[in-house]
Length: 106
Image (cartoon, rainbow, N blue to C red; front, side):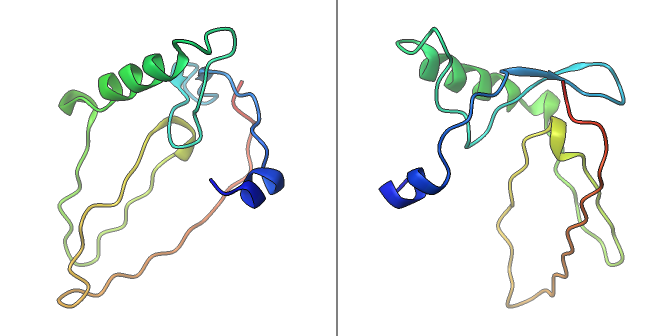
């Protein structure tokens, strides 16, 4: 991250695990934003990397096989998502983002 970006968006402490409000279950809060663990600065990055590998196991992974007319909705508060390669020359993709307001994760 460039110095200007760091100045505009300084790091904010976040919990490593959050409670998913609708289900009451705990969820790891991982992703590109996670850089360190307070109090474990010497081992924190390694632990985050280990947790990301654990969370990315096939048993937790869903890969959608798209068909015409499909609509996919997910809850960003409790999952890691990534885009898959897409052949934009052969297929048209229309994406919309909708944000709903609800209780903040705890």
